[in-house]
Amino acid sequence: MTMTRNQVHSIFLSAFVLVSALITATALPTAAQDATQQDPPSYSKMAPIEQYLMDRDAEIALARSAAPDAISRDASVVVLTPHGYETAVEGKNGWVCWVGRSWLGMFDHPEFWNPKIRAADCSSPAAARSVLPYAYKRTELLLAGHSKQEVIAAMKAAIDKKELPPLEPGSISYMMSKSSYLTDSGGHNMPHVMFYESVSGEAASSVDVPNSPMMGVNYWYLSADAYPQLKSFPPLSVFLIGADKWSDGTPAPSM
Amino acid sequence: MPKTMSKTKTIQYIFLFAFMLGIALCAPQSGSAQDTKTKYPTMAPIGQYLMADKDAEIALARSAAPDAISRDADVMVLGRHGYETAVKGKNGFVCIVGRGWSAAADPDYWNPKVRVPMCVNAPAAHSYLLGIIKITELALAGQTLDQVNHAIGAAVASKELPPMAPGAMCYMMGNQGYGGDVAPHWPAHLMFFFSDTDSAIWGANLPGSPVVAVTDPLYHLTQFVIPTQKWADGTEVQATEAHNMKSH
Figure 1 (tube, rainbow over the protein chains, first blue to last red):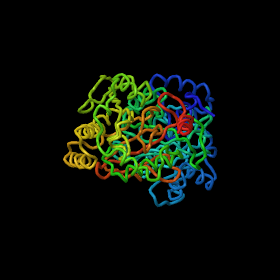
Figure 2 (spheres, rainbow over the protein chains, first blue to last red):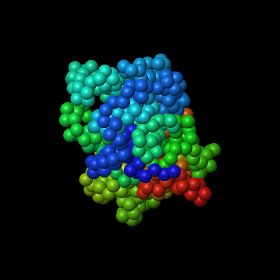
Figure 3 (cartoon, each protein chain N blue to C red):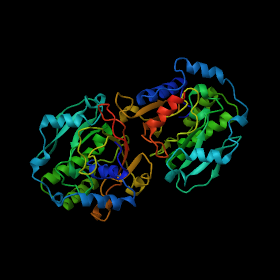
Figure 4 (spheres, rainbow over the protein chains, first blue to last red):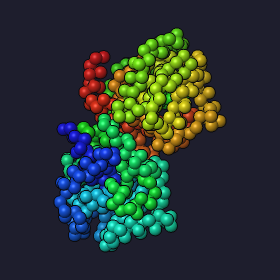
């Protein structure tokens, strides 16, 4: 099975719970428009919390499936509770595996409240220290009932007070689970590796050209105009490279 | 893959990479290093390393990256004393065709047939590529692998060669060229360059990981390699690999 580039875009656009989407400035309107057309309006607000939760053991297993066993078996695992993420398994290699939910995508992503999203991720030690705190903070605030604007303001204040750390070199995530659900679009899933850089979204999207195996996207938003305060956040982009295998070693569909 | 890697590291890199990708190298693996070393013990006449057709070298260099990147890149071609800018680009990328001393396994150091296209991004052009250019100048001056390793080590230590710039990477997605007798056809891949970085931070070289890494103490360089599913022209890698293996 070969995915079209639009399907891949949609997956990473939506998916991203950790940020996966990629598109160039010119491709962005098309991809965003596609996603908007495909997404039901119900994603405009939060669903009942139960719809985002999972059986704890199943969530641990799904989280670990994000990376090859050689990485995930010794990783810490965090799971979602009604109030935020909490550590379920203490690991010993510094990696942290978890299952991202829809609200960890861009703030203006059309699937922001899609309760079906389950994005398994294993984050490197550097990413666990410098990227996951942002995800945890966002999750706690949203689950506490704060609006997106309030969450953005609180995170900005935390950044300014250095309560949230700067990005560390070596921040990378494996998202190679066969069982993730990244988006309503396309095949819903795609194995990939992501790494984080402190560069602007514009610089990131410059790698998203025809036949490029790498895509880049702004971590915070699809459109800088959606939530203007996000423009004052530290530049953070995600680069994604598709993998040819799932974490269990079986072949993946071609990008 | 800079020649500053030790011989052992270079061979490990090639076979580790091939192993992880499930690719059968075309050259006999057992003893191939020694065989090829004896095959190219000294520098060939310099003309054998040059490409007579400048346009062909430019096209080969550009084949390393998708057209949308390489068409606006600088292109450097090999002259008798080193790389020279043949095309001035506008996007910060630089495409070159590597030769044996900078882009092949050590036994192919003097192999005049090696032609490995690569396109480096702007951060790599200001860091990684400087090492390649220096290696090339030294090799063209007749310096041996050991001499080059010594010189590069000194240049890194003195900071004549800078550390890898943040974001430094390159595309090696060309399906043409020749990687040398040890590894004739490199799979399509991306490379990311870091100085003084532990390869473990990316989870590289572990079973099932799509990331290959080699740390080179001499150059204080860690290279992360991620294979791609397609060549720069958009064709599937697997089909081409199968074709390449059949043809050998």
